[in-house]
Image (tube, rainbow, N blue to C red; front, side):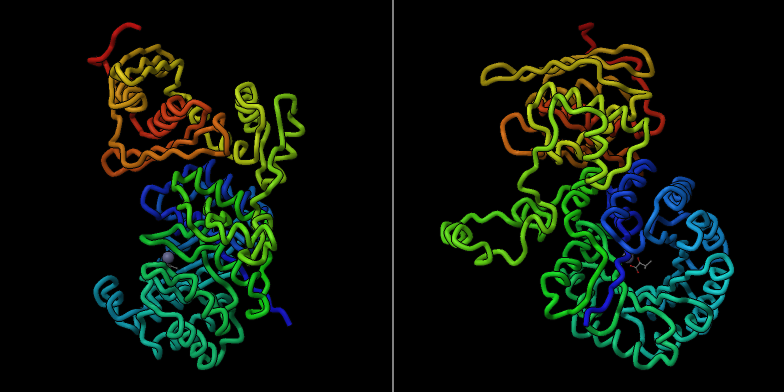
Length: 514
Ligand code: KIV
Ligand code: ZN
């Protein structure tokens, strides 16, 4: 008999807490639509009290994204809960408030400066307040992995009594081992007298690389919700990777006998979308979604796979969305075909979004004969044109070779005024960056520059991610083009457009009047 496991995706909340992973509202909406098409049960859309932007993102997701339940995170504070309730209200019966308080001795004493009795009382009040706003309340005992088990039983019983219908047991610092964690979940379910009135959930961090193993051990012990993120994004070393949890359960159904509602063929496209939107590249040997996850290099392996795939493949690449026949569109494809393909990829576009993307699609089809799904996802994330209000690339010319110093000449429109500069650099990309940066301020410190070839072939689009830091703010930008220098310039400009107060520099040394 197969049982059902609920997948609670926290890419937009814990995932967004990864350093440098912040997303703007449109990007969050795009990811949320993708998660809905993927089939997650719950989307944790954000932490509304954190900022007005977070609040608005949760509110729009609650209003616009159909299917999954929409959760908002709130500390066990009246203001947090009120704000979370307001943000998720539009999701109606699918609205969830996820409230939490720390329960480990070190967190209660050093961080909260509260006694265990005060923590229990605060948790009860928080759950009751949340229940007065929405029907579905989840309670998390932060740092449950390092909490005293008797105290954990006490607070779990009290919060279920107060109205929590999901009890989440986080291993906040990624400290647990699978056997220990599984035992902890089993003990809670057995010892808490009203445990049958709630679904037990787990939320594991990956500090020791055990997040997925711990989550699966908890499922074997009776947990029926797993909190996870695509590509394992999340605080520090990240959270349990959704794709790994889901594919472990599916591939080893003979062992786990548990089903999820995930459409596994959407895993790779959704994972790529998240990588593109956040600017966090996926390591090539990452399970399921890494570029090498199904690549057989050694002769012995290749020979085996050619004779019988299952010699070295425990699941098929197609089952997780690595399609073999990926050429979908070309120069003559129209809007309807483009919309249909995006719908298949789990992307909903409104008229404005479709117009912008269609224009980029046509430009790309002029340069590149075959347009693959990866190309479509990339032009979607190419925000160099979306954010063109303040700074827009007009032209770029870069030259390099074995003898001459690399040089780049750029022309930008900054708030409607044309500016030009040239610069030399350690390569054409460096020269282009220096020329662009000479025209604006603030222009940030480059934290990350990564290039990815989207498809095979020398006409492949290069997708570039740039991460900049200006004071406390970290922003990402993506750009794509069949010319890698142009893609780089677009990515830098997209990131610069996200810096508040960015403006044209009055005097720039490299100005040459080109
Ligand atoms: O890691 C953690 O404990 C959390 C909670 C807010 C669930 O993210
Ligand atoms: Zn977490």
